[in-house]
Image (cartoon, rainbow, N blue to C red; front, side):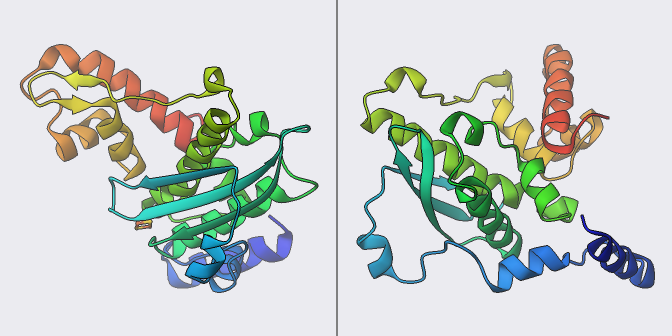
Length: 223
Ligand code: FES
């Protein structure tokens, strides 16, 4: 964050007492998104090496990402995207597309290590309630890379996470817990209020608490 950006952001917060204003960087990417497909024709004519489509269980929005990869260097040469998501999803995916294509393109292994908080950091900040929107682009990119691995005969490098049932009575999975944390429920009590996890199946509580800690750290950094 430059000092001018810091001043601007702090100013908005202190003057209004509210934290739901977008930073200048978010607004810049929302009003002028980078690497966005603007027409169907552009998307049809694009020769991608990998395409990822994901939906957000948190809000029902969708994200599609196309990537071109240099097979020799494993760098992402180009990337395009489209979404039905909100301003936060547009701004964060625009920023993600810049991050993976700048400086000659990011290597695939490094791109797979990008976390939503890295995108949020480059955006200066994002309101916590909108954090799950930044996860959409990140997941679409992972899927596009998986598809590239499949298409280029590298199936052994594909990583896809399946859902695991944690609460056996209510069939609540680790993905449900992840979504609840992304929605801002960062304690066991808050996740239980949202999902009813552990209300009947008390044996799942220790594992649920461990997962909440894991996702809280993954998305919001160490306590
Ligand atoms: S992407 Fe659905 S609310 Fe932001």
